[in-house]
Image 1 (cartoon, one colour):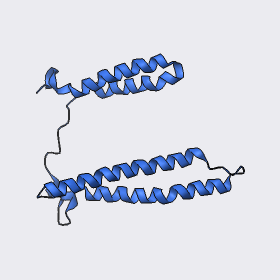
Image 2 (tube, one colour):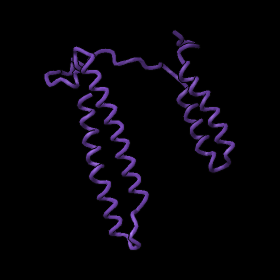
Image 3 (cartoon, rainbow, N blue to C red):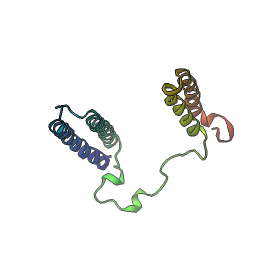
Image 4 (cartoon, rainbow, N blue to C red):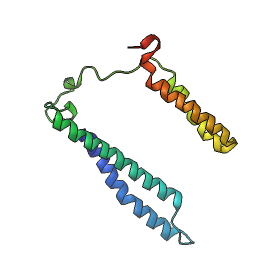
Length: 144
């Protein structure tokens, strides 16, 4: 996780520098002397998201290097491509739950536009989708 951590550390530092520069430049360019709120908010949120991902990768990399005797091939300087071969993980063969979860999120988003009652239906449907995702492998053809 060291390589991934370094990438997001660079992005965090970049947005830490760019965000106040953008805010200052829009303040200077504005005829009313105001900071442009949308772009500044986008830069600030991007900074926070990069900081969050960097922190997750840094903590995970530190934990993996402390508890594993063998580091990942991506973290070793002498590693070759063949060192990363093998099973990556378990992925479900087919599932409709992500589609239904997307529909639930769409209903929640349409609620403020057409009526809050649609958001309530979306939240109830979303709870059902979360349970569907959690218990996906306990029923049907792919149960354990």
